Length: 167
Image (cartoon, rainbow, N blue to C red; front, side):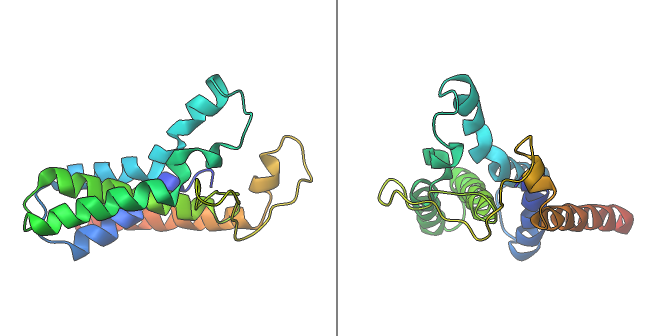
């Protein structure tokens, strides 16, 4: 995914905010936490470009592992239930980590992701994008899957303006 992580976070936040009525977090913070979580795994790009010098795919780093985010989510969720939904920190970690998991799932659409690292050293991808164009990113933008990203962005925009017009 190139452009759809933040809009997908917004869509997730809209959906969860309608379903979850009793959080200890304001609406603005709720949306901010989820949208930040939806882009956060790509913070490893700084390491990828500035330190690692692109020696391995950035989807191989721990911020793109299910084995990193699922335990965080489950521990936060367990604490949230144990606290009878009164722990602000548990809400934050639950929302943030579920958005990070969404990010990783979306990266699997057309990008190799080492989902089960460090236990299994194998990339997973739903659809392969063949290398036909230079620079490399044109292969993704000119692939049919980019339409899915545009669609995610359009859905997020419709939800945003629908909410604004309702007020």
